[in-house]
Amino acid sequence: MIALRDRCRSRRAAPALVAVLLLSGCAGHQLSSARTAFYAGRPAEAAQLLAEAKTTGRDRVLVLMERGTMRMAAGDYMGSVADFIQAHDEVERMTAVQVAQGTTSLVVNDTVQDYTGVPFERTLLHAMAAHDHFAVADWEKAAVEARRILNTLEDKARGDYPDVAYARYLAGFCLQMMDDESNAALQFRKAAALVPGLAIDDRTGRIGPASAASGPAELVCFIFIGGLHNPAAGSSVSKLEKTAFAEIHHEGHLLGRSHNLSDPVELAAKKLAKTAARVAIKETVSYQIAQDNELLGELVRLILVGILEQPDLRRWETLPRWLQVARVPCPADLTSFDVVFKNHQGVTTRTVSVTEPLARRRNTFVSYCRDLPTSTVVAPTLAPAPAAVDPATR
Image (cartoon, rainbow, N blue to C red; front, side, top):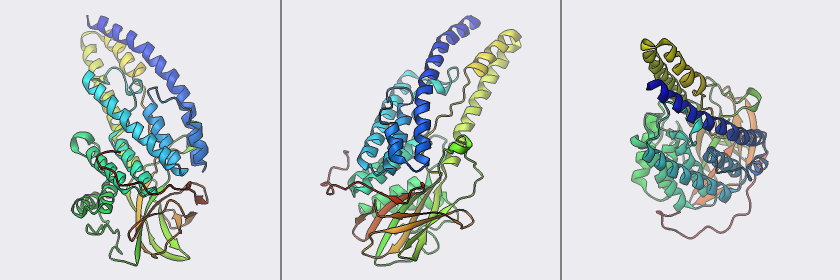
């Protein structure tokens, strides 16, 4: 009976596996080309390569995450946030279906399932959407994303994945911009607790040993360094690589530096551990069967581990390697600044002049910058700031 049931399951799984491999091969080619263009400093071209990509297959959420990041870097903030919102909606829908069906991945591996991202990716999905809202000074919608970030960081949603200090800080900053000082301070404290040795003033959100520094205005620049995809190294990113950073300059004067809060490579390590655990379970199942029937046990192992255990290598590869924040005093009439990227030894690797995005709320300027090989971050002409909307809606 057991052998018959296993044979039936394997026969049902085989056609599905073949179909997924064919579909993922097509999507994989588009994603690979787009990612290569993105890291070559051509985010608009990269986004265009995915403009016609199908978002109906098992990789639809991944495609939306990648395209949203590419559009964000290209200055298409509204197109970017639309992708992130759609990705969120798809994750919600698919998660509800999986819960209703009691989906398991013991026999059928993760590659034959719809990609919904691991918990930290779902958290950063809302973090990136918040940056899009910052770019057009839509503080209300950024606050909505902050609440969504906090929802994804609850124990039930996060499971045994680690907390995300960068997301905690970003949520705190969003709340601070909406004058929710007490909840902002709570998130700043939680972020500080996740990064030993890094001082974060929970009253102001200022970071580092010079956190008491002040000026006529303040610049909060979210810094994205490196990436999870390295075309030259076959997408391999070393966990041991030492942390880079950035300095903020204005008219030749150093305003301050960035501080690292999260490393998605470390966050992603949990996914590899889960794959190893699943393989161990399958090995145990086949071993137990082999105690009664050695041939059947080897057959089950061949099916569960040798055939069906295809490692799920899908991931949001245009995410930055390091997620950092620079919070520095600046002139009250700030219209541009330079971001000087440096490696862990302090050697300059790239300088980016930033004029956009550069939004302002009272005496706080907000921007972001990524170390793509481009000379300037250019954004389209912005429409007037939208009217206030209900924070509970998009």
